[in-house]
Length: 392
Image 1 (cartoon, rainbow, N blue to C red):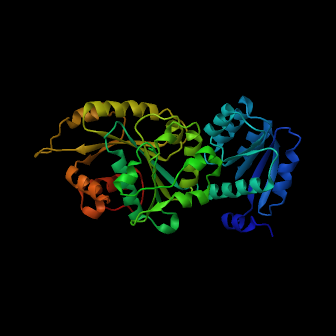
Image 2 (image 1 turned 60 degrees about the vertical axis):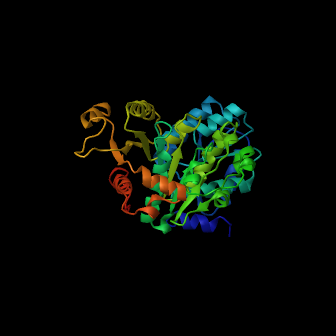
Image 3 (image 1 turned 45 degrees about the vertical axis):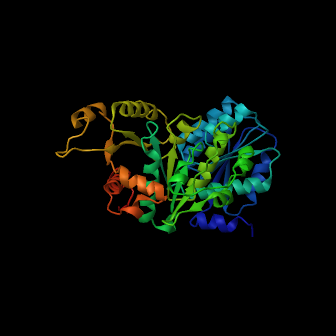
């Protein structure tokens, strides 16, 4: 009985896991097949590189293993064509050692894992097992929250959205995660009075160490039932391995939760566009003033061209203050004109309540369950993001 059997049989109870092994003509390809043959839960098939896309399209494998010597433009084009067939298809690349440019090209194509020749049988088995879990969890949703400008309130919105989702989510479905990707400030942790002292230095120098076990080590649990991943580590932002670490952490974290809320910094990073291309929804938060609205519109244009899953894009105009007779600083007709073709909504201003919640390090729901802002955000999550069971 192979150690892989319980996982594979649990994940694919009705049939074996189908693995397509792509042969590029390398002499050592037979070793890949020998490993696959040792896994009773796997049904392996092979295809030469020039037939791989056709076979993947016709037979829809659960996982693809690509065995190559290097990773140049030809290999990148093949992986890109396979990725275009299915954004969630786990791709495992086995190759010789790669230089920095080749590794970056590999990461941009979002391969599930990369293994180096000479191949370790255990490493390939583990990569396939985690790929099976990714296939199983492909229904997990990722919601990015981005500020149009500093101070617009995206971090607050991300925290409140994670709190609302956790209250309406069945823990048996994987729960909710809040992942703070602004490593320069760790703002989500500050808002919830949760300091994570775990040092990321070890994995920063070796991002390949990121796995499910590592996620359990860095995870903090909020009393309301959601997991928090928030770190203040400014040195990480400019590190050469930041791109790879962010993508690997995202893969590992999002696989654990039915819903993951990402707090994305408003400033540009080398990974932001690639991350946003793979989320399910983007919530762009701006304020009710023209500079913030103009910045939001510029970002809408950029985000529409990122490719990937083509995530749903919505704008939330935060801190809305209305007059006695429903008027606002910028007339609604003008707002509709500015956001022509863009889905937008409002969040009311509740400055005093939010400031008190921040000072106490608690979610707004602990302070005021009937908050107008929470009710508006709950409606937004249910009607716009199509997340069931969310109630203020």
